[in-house]
Image 1 (cartoon, rainbow, N blue to C red):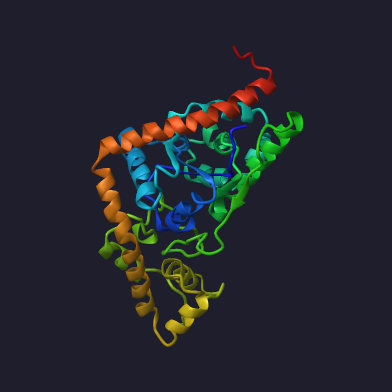
Image 2 (spheres, rainbow, N blue to C red):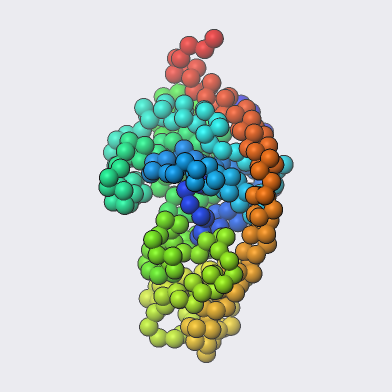
Length: 332
């Protein structure tokens, strides 16, 4: 095969503004992997259409997501950055893997249940089978590790099950990937309801902090964040609001939870929420500045899309041809 080093793969949907949860749980850590792995980072626009999209907005957000990848530190010379729909092998392998994925496995996917509840008027087959497309995304590149938030771990586990099932029938076809989950900051919760994950599709604008929010908006949202009874800054399952803010502060400052507790001993929630807002805004400012520069150069972004798609296709073709040959498809 083509592998001369281990492979890391990840993808982000261009279906809405990315949040600090996306940033802290995944994107910020991506650049570290390029030193250890051959890295593929995909804008997964085919996943996005499981719910209805406005075409012009999907197109715009595809450019924006690629620009955000680079603004967050991903060098296109060290990483393969590309758009999913530009590499047709993803859809081709997904169909094949559909035939090796059990109905019951897909029925148990938590995100299918959640999205079905949110989009009851559009429970389509793609919504049901998109974990198989995700498996194809990963397996096409003989991926060793998949950096994900904890909410995506179930999908990587299904991908492993599919790969192992295929390998039992056709030995040596796929590398079986492992999820890598950040131990800290892996799940940032809603500022309005800290028992729920922060989601870019949340209808409450005060619940979510986006990577591209301006400084005043970031600080205002943190000031309005729901906290808990009492006034002590302490990490505790009984205090989900304060614990969530401590996680955000820890991720942006590098301080441990114990250090944060000491730093804010005797302070009230108001002072702490302001501090969290300020460190978040400070950390995101350089990302936002670089993003604006990149987005202003559409020709450069399109050149990187083309380059990345050609690189990705080179690898994807080899895996797909191997799969097709093992299945008995005629190859001329």
